Amino acid sequence: MEPDEPCPCGGGTYGECCAPYHRGAEPPAAEALMRSRYAAFVLADTDYLWRTLHPDHDDRARPRDAWEAEMREGLRTLRYRRLEILDTAPPDADGVARVLFQVTLSQRRRDRSFAELSLFAHDGEGWRYLVGTTESVTRKPGDAIADWE
Image (cartoon, helix red, strand yellow):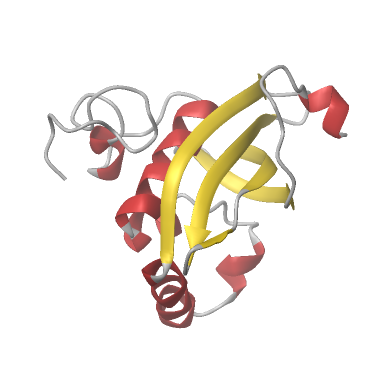
């Protein structure tokens, strides 16, 4: 992707938005990590997706090559259309930040859109994706994390 193209996450140009994170910079907050992970899904950047999984994420128990092969196969048929951040919550007493978002996407012309409440934790080096709870329903702007939990 060219630096002056719109970033897949909707946050500006790719070069000024998610590209620095994809090249190795650490996102400063959970929302920035979430946006950059979405962009990595769009771009099929499995290296970044693996690197930003928290050590406690279930997928980290799997061999990376098996995880990556499965991920690449799944990403091959998905068409990401839009990311919408609905709500965020700063780190709680346990250091876990939350991001509620909705993704519009399709797979083989079938709607696969979903909403997710993602949890993120800092691992000493940067923010990492810990776990997410998804719903196959759409949400609307103004929905809050408190409505989800």
